[in-house]
Length: 228
Picture 1 (cartoon, one colour):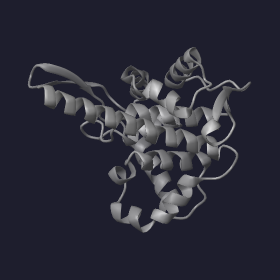
Picture 2: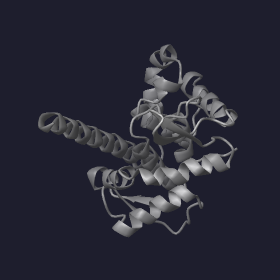
Picture 3: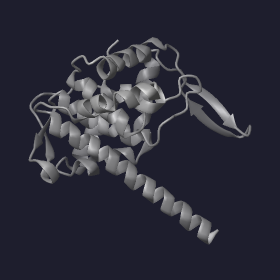
Picture 4: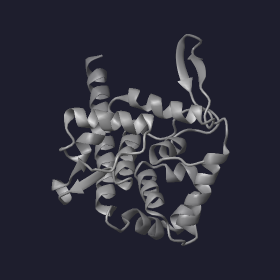
Protein backbone atom coordinates (compact mmCIF):
# COMPACT_ATOMS: atom_id res chain seq x y z
CA UNK A 1 0.00 0.00 0.00
CA UNK A 2 1.47 3.35 -1.06
CA UNK A 3 1.25 6.25 1.37
CA UNK A 4 2.30 9.85 0.87
CA UNK A 5 4.42 11.84 3.31
CA UNK A 6 1.54 13.46 5.25
CA UNK A 7 -0.09 10.05 5.73
CA UNK A 8 3.18 8.54 6.94
CA UNK A 9 3.98 11.29 9.44
CA UNK A 10 0.44 11.12 10.82
CA UNK A 11 0.84 7.37 11.44
CA UNK A 12 4.10 8.02 13.28
CA UNK A 13 2.38 10.73 15.34
CA UNK A 14 -0.44 8.47 16.61
CA UNK A 15 -0.30 5.92 19.40
CA UNK A 16 -1.15 2.58 17.78
CA UNK A 17 -3.44 1.39 20.58
CA UNK A 18 -5.08 4.50 22.03
CA UNK A 19 -5.28 6.43 18.76
CA UNK A 20 -4.12 9.59 20.50
CA UNK A 21 -1.36 11.77 19.13
CA UNK A 22 2.08 11.10 20.62
CA UNK A 23 3.92 14.05 19.09
CA UNK A 24 3.38 17.77 19.54
CA UNK A 25 1.69 19.81 16.84
CA UNK A 26 0.98 17.11 14.22
CA UNK A 27 -0.91 19.66 12.12
CA UNK A 28 2.32 21.63 11.54
CA UNK A 29 4.23 18.44 10.83
CA UNK A 30 1.63 17.34 8.27
CA UNK A 31 1.71 20.77 6.61
CA UNK A 32 5.49 20.56 6.23
CA UNK A 33 5.12 17.03 4.90
CA UNK A 34 2.60 18.29 2.34
CA UNK A 35 5.04 20.96 1.18
CA UNK A 36 7.82 18.38 0.83
CA UNK A 37 5.45 15.95 -0.90
CA UNK A 38 4.46 18.52 -3.53
CA UNK A 39 8.13 19.36 -4.13
CA UNK A 40 9.01 15.68 -4.56
CA UNK A 41 6.09 15.28 -6.97
CA UNK A 42 7.54 18.29 -8.85
CA UNK A 43 4.15 19.99 -8.55
CA UNK A 44 5.90 22.87 -6.77
CA UNK A 45 9.21 24.29 -7.94
CA UNK A 46 11.65 26.07 -5.62
CA UNK A 47 12.85 29.51 -6.70
CA UNK A 48 15.70 31.33 -5.00
CA UNK A 49 17.93 30.16 -2.18
CA UNK A 50 18.20 30.44 1.57
CA UNK A 51 15.91 33.03 3.11
CA UNK A 52 14.77 34.09 -0.37
CA UNK A 53 13.52 30.61 -1.30
CA UNK A 54 9.92 30.59 -2.48
CA UNK A 55 7.72 28.10 -4.35
CA UNK A 56 5.78 28.36 -7.59
CA UNK A 57 3.31 25.95 -9.09
CA UNK A 58 4.82 23.96 -11.94
CA UNK A 59 3.25 22.61 -15.10
CA UNK A 60 3.20 19.15 -13.50
CA UNK A 61 -0.17 18.55 -11.81
CA UNK A 62 -0.02 17.11 -8.29
CA UNK A 63 -1.42 13.67 -7.55
CA UNK A 64 -4.98 14.19 -6.35
CA UNK A 65 -5.34 13.72 -2.60
CA UNK A 66 -7.93 15.26 -0.23
CA UNK A 67 -5.33 16.66 2.15
CA UNK A 68 -2.68 17.98 -0.23
CA UNK A 69 -5.42 19.33 -2.53
CA UNK A 70 -6.93 21.32 0.36
CA UNK A 71 -3.54 22.53 1.54
CA UNK A 72 -2.42 23.66 -1.91
CA UNK A 73 -5.74 25.44 -2.50
CA UNK A 74 -5.35 27.31 0.80
CA UNK A 75 -1.81 28.34 -0.10
CA UNK A 76 -2.84 29.51 -3.56
CA UNK A 77 -5.72 31.52 -2.12
CA UNK A 78 -3.34 33.53 0.07
CA UNK A 79 -0.46 33.39 -2.42
CA UNK A 80 2.35 30.88 -2.75
CA UNK A 81 5.00 33.61 -2.89
CA UNK A 82 5.66 33.54 0.86
CA UNK A 83 8.31 32.13 3.16
CA UNK A 84 7.98 28.37 3.74
CA UNK A 85 7.37 29.01 7.44
CA UNK A 86 4.37 31.17 6.57
CA UNK A 87 2.94 28.42 4.38
CA UNK A 88 3.36 25.82 7.13
CA UNK A 89 1.98 28.10 9.83
CA UNK A 90 -1.08 29.03 7.76
CA UNK A 91 -2.19 25.41 7.44
CA UNK A 92 -0.66 24.00 10.61
CA UNK A 93 -2.48 26.55 12.71
CA UNK A 94 -5.86 25.24 11.52
CA UNK A 95 -6.47 21.75 12.84
CA UNK A 96 -9.48 21.18 10.61
CA UNK A 97 -7.04 20.44 7.77
CA UNK A 98 -6.06 17.20 9.51
CA UNK A 99 -9.57 15.76 9.26
CA UNK A 100 -9.41 14.81 5.54
CA UNK A 101 -5.98 13.28 6.16
CA UNK A 102 -7.31 11.13 8.98
CA UNK A 103 -10.32 10.20 6.87
CA UNK A 104 -8.10 8.97 4.04
CA UNK A 105 -6.39 6.57 6.45
CA UNK A 106 -9.78 5.44 7.76
CA UNK A 107 -10.99 4.86 4.19
CA UNK A 108 -7.86 2.82 3.47
CA UNK A 109 -8.65 0.63 6.47
CA UNK A 110 -5.47 1.61 8.33
CA UNK A 111 -7.17 3.59 11.11
CA UNK A 112 -10.61 3.40 12.66
CA UNK A 113 -12.58 6.26 14.16
CA UNK A 114 -13.73 5.91 17.76
CA UNK A 115 -15.81 8.34 19.79
CA UNK A 116 -14.85 8.71 23.45
CA UNK A 117 -15.92 10.87 26.36
CA UNK A 118 -13.74 12.54 28.94
CA UNK A 119 -15.27 12.53 32.43
CA UNK A 120 -18.33 10.90 30.81
CA UNK A 121 -19.29 14.32 29.41
CA UNK A 122 -16.87 15.82 26.91
CA UNK A 123 -16.74 14.01 23.55
CA UNK A 124 -13.53 13.50 21.62
CA UNK A 125 -12.35 11.32 18.74
CA UNK A 126 -9.40 8.93 18.60
CA UNK A 127 -7.94 6.98 15.68
CA UNK A 128 -6.45 3.62 16.76
CA UNK A 129 -4.97 1.34 14.14
CA UNK A 130 -7.31 -1.05 12.36
CA UNK A 131 -4.53 -2.55 10.21
CA UNK A 132 -1.03 -2.35 11.73
CA UNK A 133 0.85 -3.71 8.71
CA UNK A 134 1.24 -0.44 6.71
CA UNK A 135 2.91 1.31 9.65
CA UNK A 136 4.97 -1.79 10.46
CA UNK A 137 6.21 -1.85 6.86
CA UNK A 138 6.96 1.88 7.07
CA UNK A 139 9.03 1.38 10.22
CA UNK A 140 10.93 -1.54 8.70
CA UNK A 141 11.78 0.62 5.72
CA UNK A 142 13.03 3.49 7.87
CA UNK A 143 15.03 1.10 10.07
CA UNK A 144 16.77 -0.22 6.96
CA UNK A 145 17.68 3.32 5.96
CA UNK A 146 18.82 4.46 9.40
CA UNK A 147 20.48 1.36 10.84
CA UNK A 148 21.65 -0.76 7.90
CA UNK A 149 23.46 1.84 5.77
CA UNK A 150 21.44 1.22 2.64
CA UNK A 151 20.88 4.11 0.27
CA UNK A 152 17.65 5.84 1.34
CA UNK A 153 15.29 7.27 -1.21
CA UNK A 154 14.74 11.03 -1.25
CA UNK A 155 11.27 10.38 0.18
CA UNK A 156 12.63 8.33 3.10
CA UNK A 157 15.30 10.94 3.79
CA UNK A 158 12.65 13.67 4.04
CA UNK A 159 10.44 11.52 6.25
CA UNK A 160 13.32 10.72 8.60
CA UNK A 161 14.24 14.40 8.82
CA UNK A 162 10.63 15.45 9.47
CA UNK A 163 10.11 12.78 12.12
CA UNK A 164 13.42 13.65 13.76
CA UNK A 165 12.58 17.36 13.85
CA UNK A 166 9.37 16.64 15.77
CA UNK A 167 10.84 14.07 18.16
CA UNK A 168 8.95 11.19 16.57
CA UNK A 169 11.94 8.95 15.91
CA UNK A 170 12.55 8.38 19.62
CA UNK A 171 8.85 7.62 20.09
CA UNK A 172 8.82 4.96 17.37
CA UNK A 173 12.29 3.39 17.32
CA UNK A 174 14.79 1.91 19.74
CA UNK A 175 16.51 4.80 21.55
CA UNK A 176 19.81 2.95 21.88
CA UNK A 177 19.94 2.31 18.13
CA UNK A 178 19.07 5.92 17.40
CA UNK A 179 21.93 7.08 19.62
CA UNK A 180 24.32 4.59 18.04
CA UNK A 181 23.45 5.78 14.52
CA UNK A 182 22.92 9.49 15.24
CA UNK A 183 25.62 10.53 12.75
CA UNK A 184 24.00 8.40 10.07
CA UNK A 185 20.59 9.92 10.81
CA UNK A 186 22.08 13.42 10.62
CA UNK A 187 23.68 12.57 7.28
CA UNK A 188 20.37 11.27 5.90
CA UNK A 189 18.46 14.29 7.20
CA UNK A 190 20.81 16.72 5.48
CA UNK A 191 20.21 14.95 2.17
CA UNK A 192 21.42 15.83 -1.30
CA UNK A 193 20.08 16.29 -4.80
CA UNK A 194 18.09 19.00 -6.61
CA UNK A 195 15.14 18.97 -4.21
CA UNK A 196 17.30 18.82 -1.08
CA UNK A 197 17.32 22.53 -0.24
CA UNK A 198 13.60 22.91 -0.92
CA UNK A 199 12.67 19.99 1.30
CA UNK A 200 15.18 21.14 3.91
CA UNK A 201 13.41 24.50 3.94
CA UNK A 202 10.10 22.67 4.48
CA UNK A 203 11.62 20.89 7.48
CA UNK A 204 13.06 24.13 8.89
CA UNK A 205 9.64 25.72 8.39
CA UNK A 206 8.09 22.98 10.51
CA UNK A 207 10.64 23.56 13.28
CA UNK A 208 10.07 27.31 13.24
CA UNK A 209 6.27 26.95 13.17
CA UNK A 210 6.28 24.49 16.09
CA UNK A 211 8.60 26.75 18.07
CA UNK A 212 6.35 29.76 17.42
CA UNK A 213 3.25 27.77 18.41
CA UNK A 214 4.97 26.53 21.58
CA UNK A 215 5.98 30.06 22.58
CA UNK A 216 2.48 31.36 21.85
CA UNK A 217 0.94 28.58 23.93
CA UNK A 218 3.33 29.19 26.82
CA UNK A 219 2.66 32.93 26.69
CA UNK A 220 -1.09 32.35 26.71
CA UNK A 221 -0.81 29.94 29.64
CA UNK A 222 1.37 32.39 31.58
CA UNK A 223 -1.04 35.26 30.90
CA UNK A 224 -3.97 33.13 32.04
CA UNK A 225 -2.20 32.16 35.27
CA UNK A 226 -1.32 35.80 35.98
CA UNK A 227 -4.81 37.13 35.31
CA UNK A 228 -6.60 34.10 36.79
